[in-house]
Image (cartoon, rainbow, N blue to C red; front, side, top):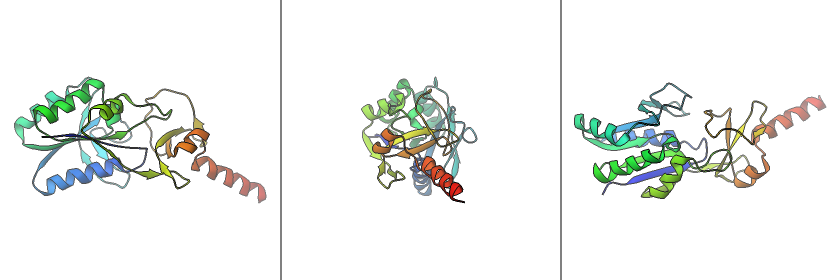
Length: 207
């Protein structure tokens, strides 16, 4: 039976890199994959899954109201799909998470979804909430906080490196806007960026 897998992590853990490697592994063996990415993710060219280490691959940029089951079914008419891979899966709607379970259950195609578990306030994203509830397998992709502990949370920062405590959940950004931290430093609001700025400030004063 095909399954839904949810690979979750904090920011900058290499989720897109793992997705692209998984797709490559299938294609290297002559199998076809289908990549999906939310159109709302504007960090790079729309319709592209891109990793921080320079790897990229074309993908279908879906909208919030798209029926992913219907789209995959249409694609399956033209090619035999071995796997569907979804980047930034936290942006899926509840209905779309249900649809990807249908892709596994009715079309017998495994679905690998990659995304954040929580936002900068420590709250679950809607897509992640239902993936955690409905996925067959949950796999954590690990990364580390600036202190060396495992990072499990995300913090939004401004241009000065200060933690942003309030705001809309949906704010697209990369390393300049988000950092991954452990639970302790999520609570205290300490980030490496702010720590580095303090060190630079102290060095300037000594000079």
